[in-house]
Amino acid sequence: MSRFLDARYQALQAYTPGEQPRDMVYIKLNTNESPYPPAPSVVEAITAGEVELLRLYSDPTGKELKEKLAQLYGVQPDMVFLSNGSDEVLNFAFMAFGGDGVTFPDITYGFYEVFGDLYRIPYEKIPLKEDFSIDHTDFCGKEKMVVIANPNAPTGLSLPLGQVERIVASNPDHLVLVDEAYVDFGGESFLPLIGKYDNLLITRTFSKSRCLAGGRLGYAFGNPEIIADLEKIKFSTNPYNLDRLTLRLGVATVEAEDYYREACEKIQKTRAWTTAQLESLGFQVLPSLTNFVFAKTDKMDGKALYLALKQRGILVRHFTNPRICQFNRITIGTLEQMQALIAAIQEILEGNHEKL
Ligand SMILES: *Cc1c(COP(=O)(O)O)cnc(C)c1O
Image (cartoon, rainbow, N blue to C red; front, side):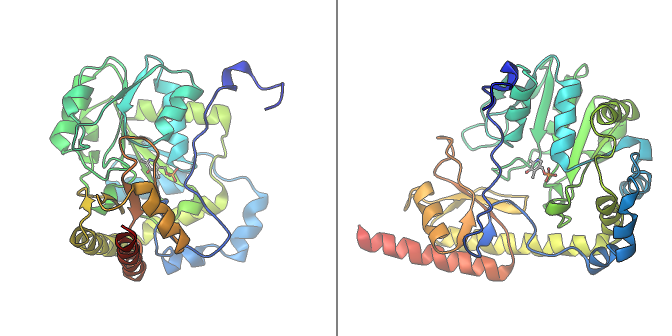
């Protein structure tokens, strides 16, 4: 730390992204990326001509992509916000709407807490129930901003729409942010109810279901006033938050919707296969509606399993929080990758048994 850093940030604990080691080629099941490449038409969208156009600034309004998304999801373009990954719209939302404080579950996406710290917003972490589900009544009538990931991460569990609606309806004077980063893997979106509530912001990302984590493209739906507030923050920080290539990739991605639906279906099938395999090995697997599973076994410590898999070239995500440190979060890859995972776990558990 230099002696110039503002006192406000000296104790800030930054977000820790999942590890991206370069020492060998891993089967990467630790950051919920898609195992599939973008659609061929998306790959072809970046031509030499597009690269040459980089001498010009990108469209700060993102008009074309907003219109495409609006059409796909049946909303007006002024209800759509575009961001540099959905992390950026989360950042803006905490900045813009978190003044009275924020509340979110104790076990959820780690970035919410970092934004709370960054903006010195008082936040309340409400414990998940014993079974790791969210008790929606805990989030009703809060008199502060509410942030819920639905489905939640890293648990993979989903809240029924009726319960999300009760949270939104019971907090009419504060924003309720529903983070739908994983909604395309079998979850139910709150989007159809967007016209009914003026205190709702739904955030989404191209990182998981749209195979574009490295492209950094997020989006959000809200009523036009909320979106205008977010635009004001954006134009006050970085008007060109999306570069030309990413905008181009975004448009081509929306045009290839069928390809991504199919990819998501494949992942759901592989998720079912993986869950059954893990269960047959004695794991407890939380019922997931995402592109990952959260699993633990009584036969082996969670961290020890993570390390043993890493040694065998398979990366999963382990969290040190005592409530979940026996679990590992495992991204659903291709079927071949998951077969390799299951074989490795079998081998590890057998070796472990011999030692006992
Ligand atoms: C991955 C993730 C995000 C952010 O993804 P971006 O890559 O920044 O779009 C947001 N929320 C949750 C719950 C996530 O898991």
